[in-house]
Image (cartoon, one colour):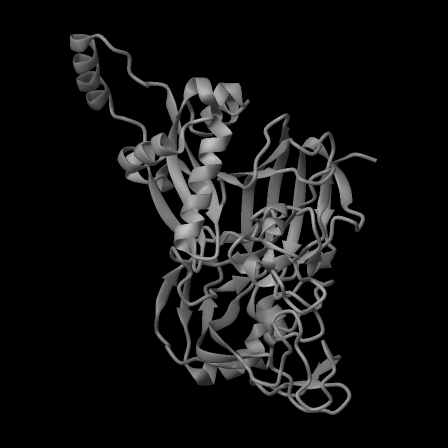
Length: 430
């Protein structure tokens, strides 16, 4: 039965198009999700593969392969009061092949062993069989960050306070009832106290189900490339399988409350999911991880028929647009018209900005991917795309090693031809 509102209360660690989706939600309907933290909690939970705990995908009514789904992010309400994060280092003898996919007990060698919590600290998670510490990742430099009651600003705390927080780790994380992850606050670490960080909540992993079964954290061309030729159950045969992903794990900090993410439909119903909400993050996510939090997210869903995408398009808030693609001032337009009228040619006055995601093993590959996606989608020669993006656009880094967003102004007739004009124009109040 099609529902106007779907509450996403079930979680998965692996995206599998063969598994039944929740929903379906009505085309034009709403998804309400309460999600647990992303990276570090799942990373220290050895019993599950993938490093991300996300909502079970939700089918969208009327969404067919070759369509696109627009996700309007209406609300991101941070629920966690504190979270712990930092740089990771894979721990020798605690995994086989990939520490996020095949953690193992260093003693009994069981893959993805059952575990329990014994105390606090990095050694607190122990194998249920032999009772030794299991930690596929260790923390290099770490911090615990505590938020104010209104979730407006956060401060990193000393190690002594981090230990107090660790004693009520789940409470400070506000883990959802159905979450299976351990709280990252158990780490009880705090090396860089006193940093002041205003909150700007964003969603790091949001999109549609890929065509193949993959751990949720690997649904992107950069991190997903590690699956090619791997020795575990989620290995991809060759590089062409990367095209079956949907680049949901973007870590692009423009995906905030009020923004729109337009995602490809590569399986029937689309399978919309989300997770990995961050309290704040700078471009590039240089540490590899940031402030993962539990959050309630409300999204409006609509189908764009016949818009065949390879990866996501983002419509940022107007104030988040790079200056080079922002709307031209009346003064600029007037001066441009004087030139065009003097020499007798037309201006591209009705152009609107979009951001196209590109991904790859490194930043160069990601940029090439994004440029090619623009070229193919709008039928613009690649060389022309590069010129347009040089003088009226730019590249920003979403996440290292290889996720970028390319901002470009697209003429009205091209947007109208793909059914994009209405949603972009409405979003920017044109």
